[in-house]
Amino acid sequence: VQLVESGGGLVQAGGSLRLSCAASGRTFGSDVMGWFRQAPGKEREFVAAIQWSTFYADSVKGRFTISRDNAKNTVYLQMNSLKPEDTAVYYCARARSGSGVVYYSRVYDSWGQGTQVTVSS
Image (cartoon, rainbow, N blue to C red; front, side, top):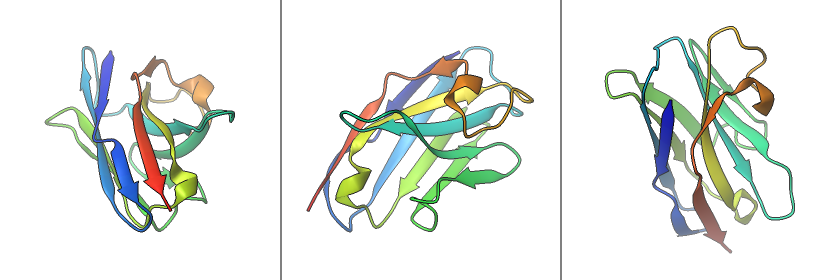
């Protein structure tokens, strides 16, 4: 499975961005699709995931929305009310159904190359 993210960029605090992740290869509608992020000097952290339900990190709940279009093999992350602490490289990832708890990066077997999101104050 190949994953390609797009939509990152520079935005002022309070602004919005929408990230996209296009998947190709052997994908299934039952796959878990997740977004993680990694800021400089910090570990990669869970942001959001979607399968039959959606899951969010507390830090983004109410501001970010994950969605998917299975017909297009694409997953989206709508990010509103962005804060400087949201600055990071954002990664899209895929986990097969039943792989485990969606919050853990180790259950994901395919990753994109990442897209930079920078929020200025």
